[in-house]
Length: 488
Image 1 (tube, helix red, strand yellow):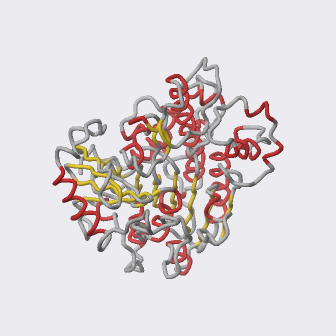
Image 2 (cartoon, helix red, strand yellow; image 1 turned 120 degrees about the vertical axis):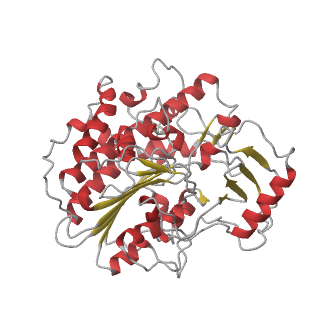
Image 3 (cartoon, rainbow, N blue to C red; image 1 turned 90 degrees about the vertical axis):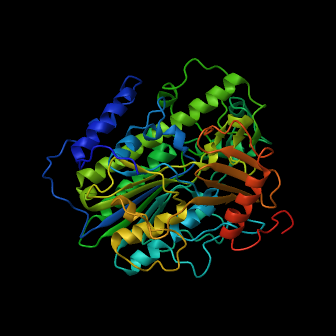
């Protein structure tokens, strides 16, 4: 674990850090969110019930390399960067399974979803017999609340991701959600966008968002505004709380307000690439690809801005002084790297598999430090329970990461990590990263130290390394021979 000068950060430090980054937005017409909340005295007393409390923020499709705290120098993420200053920052965080629902199953239950069989590859309800962290905390007397626009969790029949939450605020209309009538979209409206497939996805999205009137009507603002409302409710009284804000942005479609887009791209004239085709990127010109990257970056900055407004309210209420904050993303997204766009099971490059994980302890433990422990989505639930001193996690596969906050070792050290997406697997240790089909074909191998951009494939030169990682990591972690996903 690397160290920075240790100092307990105060709320004033957070506002200063966030405001410094966000002030760049002011020049583009977007006021610094640090100026939205009055500065409170340092002696402001904590609220939030008896405490300790937990706030879990899940961000969809957020790449690690698009966050300032992880080294990005061109995308504006002042809120995430300020959180990182108060947190233990995990530099080797990777989802154990992808995409959206498999990752969330692991987050909520502490159980691995990989490997799973066709046809859904983990895109299923939380299985019977697996208890969510919300259910455990509800039984312990916590108030539990969820704000989310991840419509997959409750709109399709049989999904049960709201279990354990006393209060929920679900927001409809993301991506392909059949929320509003797509026939209401006129043909000339379609012409402004690059068409992907038969256009049904685009038409549905445009129908879902056609009534927007202000920035507050976009999805990330609605999620964090809803979370703020829930925060006011659960912070009252003498019961501690567990609050989850699950934001689907910056998942595509990417169509943020112009004030955010202009931070990254000005003068573009042409059809907007707001929805990527999942596959080769040769359907885009170089200029269109640059535009797509700008739109994605703009979505991140808008999400970051509204996350900041939510956390400022938490600070204003005095909640953060006795609350654990965990921020995690579920996967990344390819934006032309390696010749692909989208989330592709057969292209498990770092742009897709390297994610964000920050753990902020209310006493400042681990603040400003980093760890290269191989962490994953199924570690979130046991970490929350470990912080609260609740031992009801014997059936969880994940690790309690709280010892790392004190500079100690976890109960089970990890020398590697495995993950899966559909019928493909990825294994990594300190020296190599390998991904392949579940039957060991289509293998790719990269130097994890000297080729972090994964530009030189070593699979043909080191076939024994591929075989060893497949056998010693993938097969053993799968507790036996991996199934052939294509044949069931």
